[in-house]
Length: 93
Image 1 (cartoon, helix red, strand yellow):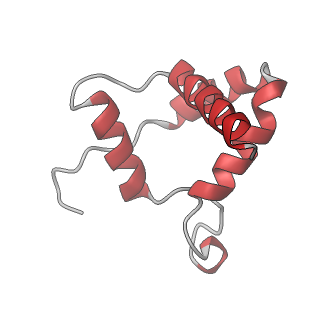
Image 2: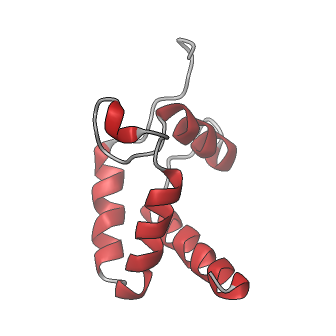
Image 3: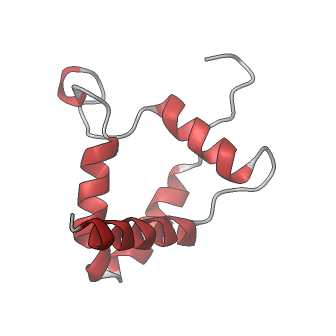
């Protein structure tokens, strides 16, 4: 990672997105599946010992979606989960 890498979104984004997600129980299973799919390989063997995506991967995804200027929106996470659920339904999971 270079010194000019885009910083990750602040924790407040994740809290706000989580609060929105709690109001959408129909997306909970999809969110759990996506969390498992995006977790770092062997996450249990490396700090922070939590199944989260790799920080470089998240930076890449946020930069390709938002560019350098626009901040991520919590509602976009719900739109992503809805898209994932639709793709799962189409593929038959």
